[in-house]
Image (cartoon, rainbow, N blue to C red; front, side, top):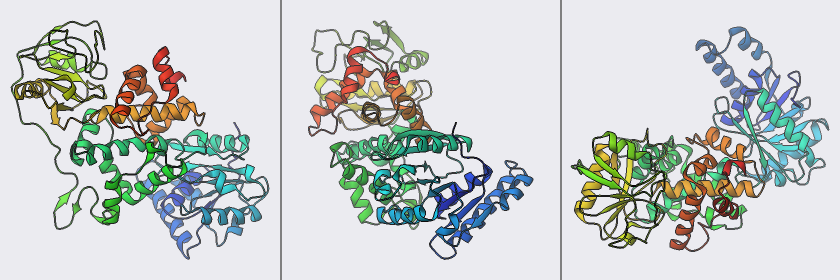
Length: 521
């Protein structure tokens, strides 16, 4: 390992929340740290905040008093960038504006030793562009911490086109020594976490704009059915809708208008209205104020229905296969004609009266079909069932009745899953519903990143688990459902929404054809 020696001073430029957090990480790791900010008094305030946090850590028993006292002697506020000259590593954490960062790095190159590593904490800008014009762009690397830096484990290490691989490796190894988990990647739009996460917001916006479901229901389905720690609208309000839109627009612009990253009108409208989220008291939801609201309203949840006495399962479930055990445990009699997940699946749109059904057959002949991307309307008297992340722990399912669905069929479907202990949200019959389209797009984005050799398969999954809190990495999720299922759903969505947003990655199509594990790509 090429770890920066603890005896080597570390400089941090920018004493805001992120800069101070990074300084604290380096300080606790044992380095001498010098914190600089161009705003008068900001560095001193940053130092005071860090020391106060160290005292709180001592009070909570997470840091020895002797270690905190020693750290106090290693932390100073720098009066100018020139004061960072002794640093062997300088981490920039200033405003996300390319001209500002270039000016900072231009000065650092003049004052720091030739063997000093210059790192940027940028989350959206190109490391290559930041280093362009420097005499030694090879010693510039990304070192992207996640907020709050002292708590979040992930550090992305994006290498620019001119970055010396050994420099990037030293940054990664140093992050490990500081107790972080580094992920090396190329300096491409959004790096790993922000890039792969785009569909998490995008698919929610698509369903919202299409009238498929309201914000609260979308959030509830993605948390309670899929297992995400926070819904996209709640998360956007927490991050700031202006910030979220800016990140998405940056990725879209840097990919020259790739439709996979196109912003949505609804996003722009909330920003134009000044509804930026929690920091303004209103975003997708209201927080306090005259309305007296404290967050998301209740999601759309079906009233209790009587479950059917008996159903027949004909195969066809993959992501929802585990729900069959919950239905059986609830006391509903079930005949099963399957040998495992996706057994005897005939495919969406292929069932005709008189042929063998797939999915769950309800009394009266109506069907519950796990979504394959096709609307339930294409299958007559049918209800589509959205995917679940973990059938054993899910607390909600999402259903969509087709236009020809009989009222009794929907009632039976609702009652069936309620009997299994699940809340039921009924939404409009949009292609791919909510979870399936979101998961498939996350998997596709992850595979495409690997295909372009911008990050390794293991690192992509690590980044999404540690950086965004996803219940599993997207590649692991794709393997669980099956690459062929993911590719099929994307193909269906691509036909429903022409224009390129849902085009499957060629590498995903190959894996689907050969059965290769996505985690082995």
